[in-house]
Length: 128
Image (cartoon, rainbow, N blue to C red; front, side, top):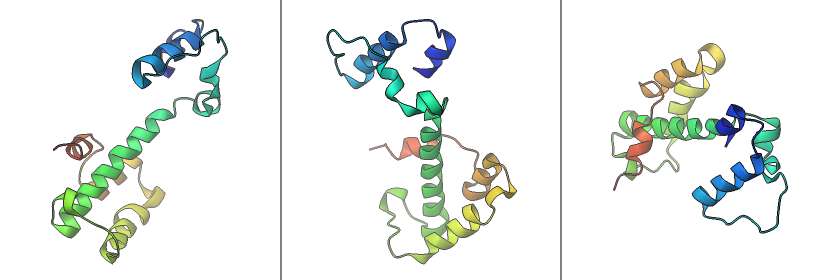
């Protein structure tokens, strides 16, 4: 939605919103309604270009999980359980928390996971 909205802000944004809702969420637009429903999303009104951060967070979380599985547990990520294992806290403390703002996020990702941010671990999480 946002990309199209910024490409052509003069278009009927409510129509664009509902076209996408119908296509991706399979919800029907309410009949006889013509209100700026897209504006109910705070991300669009007060935090533009924000939704991609959710995906980046998911990618980072998957990469960290795979790094933990590889470096700490030496096990298949699908078999790893963190509950009660202090090594997880130590890994997070040293690899993610301690560096904090001393390095840009992409360097921190490399430091914590051994790779730049990518979708490989995330995709593996969904393999059968």
